[in-house]
Amino acid sequence: MKRFEFLIERALFLCALLSVGTTVGIILVLAVETYAFLLEVPITDFLLGTNWTPLFATPSFGVLPLVAGTVLVSGIAMMVALPMGLLSAIYLSEYAPSKVRRAIKPVLEILAGVPTVVYGYFALLFVTPLLQWLLPDLAGFNALSPGVVMGIMILPMVSSLSEDAMRAVPRGLREGAYALGATKMQTSLRVVVPAAFSGITAACILATSRAIGETMIVAIAAGQQPRLTANPLVPVETMTAYIVQVSLGDTPQGTLEYRTIFAVGMLLFLGTFGLNLMSAWLRARFREEYT
Amino acid sequence: MSGAALADATTRRAIARRRWLDLLFQALALLVLCLALGALAVLIADVWHDGYNRLSWDFLSGFPSRRPADAGIWHALSGSLFVILVTAALAVPVGVAAALYLEEYAKSGLLARVIEINITNLAAVPSIIYGLLGLGLFVRAMGMGRSVLAGASTLALLVLPVIILSTREALRAVPSSIREGSYALGATKWQTVWYQVLPVALPGILTGVILALSRAIGETAPLISIGALTFVAFAPDSLWSPFTVLPIQVFNWVSRPQVEFQATAAAGILVLLALLITMNGAAIWLRDRYQKKLG
Figure 1 (spheres, each protein chain N blue to C red):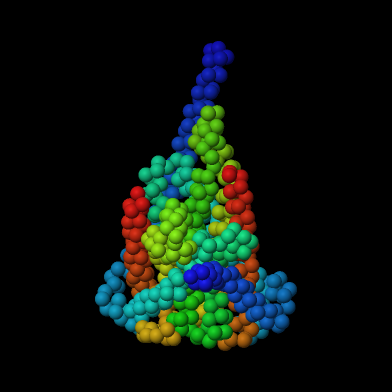
Figure 2: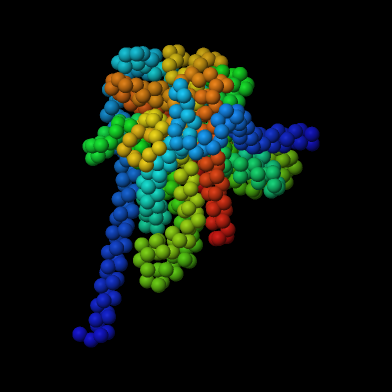
């Protein structure tokens, strides 16, 4: 009996350990291929080069255009998701009657659960034509439309995480502000939001990380032309879209092209991993403040 | 007018202004929220408008075709269902077991903390990175090729952290008196977990599992990067057959230059959304039943 209990506990432990194995696996797979890639391409050429043409006859491996595309699209997404998500969170946490909250939150969950390929379709075939009607210069593939749609996609995440942070602010702080004659708006903006600041920042960082790693919207609607530009009206390519582009072709294992997707993947992983850690650290600090 | 009265009037004006600002702010926040919800409505209306007249029994049971009017979706629908079943078979036992360990067994040591932080982090790793892991590990190193098994294994790793997190949530909701009662009757730890804790937590666990799997069914990027073929003209019949899934088929149709394929893509999206609504409906139904039972 004792032996059986012990074996069960070991087995359960191994299952829990598998999650650590996944992280190790990700790092190993990315590191091995990235190392092989860096043996052929100097790291300075990769990180600082401004030309990304790995599939050309005379290839060039400067990753900056892909980084610029990623930053541009996720920057636009955050410009949409941040103010809208924060305002929604303030409304849901401070103003909305509980009936309204209960009705709205499931709808926001649906918004977050729509598959990204559907958002890609929406960006390419609805939002881009709509924006072209406003901005005649807009190309058929561009950074603006997928950026805006991606912003709508991550809005529920910004909103629900910020709302959690605001609701964790003790009632006493609000009541103190009301007692001094502050309106709800003043209380929200000058007491609740500052008090929940690290929680809200954590939410925004996590949302940024999500935007950087988002793939299908940009693969469908942003085009596939690596370009070092800050112009949202022309086609660009993000790091994720490049990985999709190469994966769709039949690139043989062991070639330099095959290794590029792992090198780009490594950069993507390190970037998002850093942001995730920062967000977790901020959340932990926020929890300490009010317990 | 005396000074006091003047000050009084100024104050009253200031208060009125602040109330007015407050109202304006509330209206703005509500407007923004409605805008977000409106976007969802527009999205669904747009897809429905583009795709509803392509929906038919022939579309559901048909196979891909170069002519948009003949293209069907059965190969992708069956591929999605097959892959998700294998994913569930792989991820659910491991995920529930890991959650049981962390919630019921683990002492709050360094290792448990490392595992915990690691799971939170994994849940936020971009899905395409899991695709690269699947490509390097399952497709190449373990020689599974671009098969159903490789795709399901990749998705299983992707949903594992989500399943672990939601299962722990469900286990935490089980009152500790149930555990103590079981121990008092002389049950061992595993007997307590197996006969008392798991049955009570089951509806909560199932809800989490269904939500995690409905996320996996909409995933496109990881399956593209392991090289799931976008033109497969048959339904998968074994763990080793090549396959395609609904979102990849939709992506394939969206990327074609012919305009007629857009309607086909929209119809594919409607099938995908119908599948998701069914799964989410099941999850909500389970959650409601569960809540009634406790209350």
